[in-house]
Image (cartoon, rainbow, N blue to C red; front, side, top):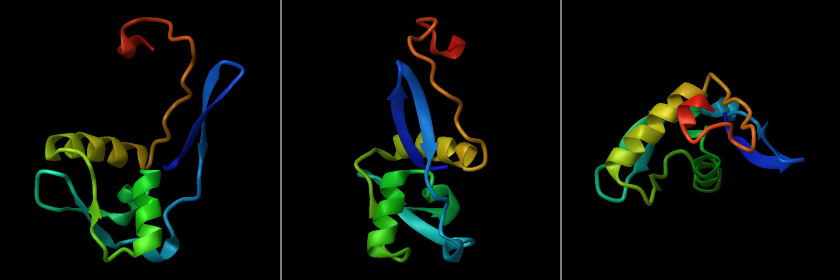
Length: 104
């Protein structure tokens, strides 16, 4: 789920944007980390990242999207994107209630 984070009265909010275009469903797109070979992911997963989605809209789904992250980082980001493609992230409550992020 792609979208924008913003703050309202001191609380973080998430405003989802439109989902992946219907014509992209079932397509694979290429994401290239700065230090490795391109990784193929579904367009639905790629649409979770607004910047990747914007690049695909501008250049087409056939174009490879170069990313300024290492392959290990991209792997973790893809885990997040796959999870949040179907499960929207929760609201971020500020101020954080603990220094331990797992408790927030």
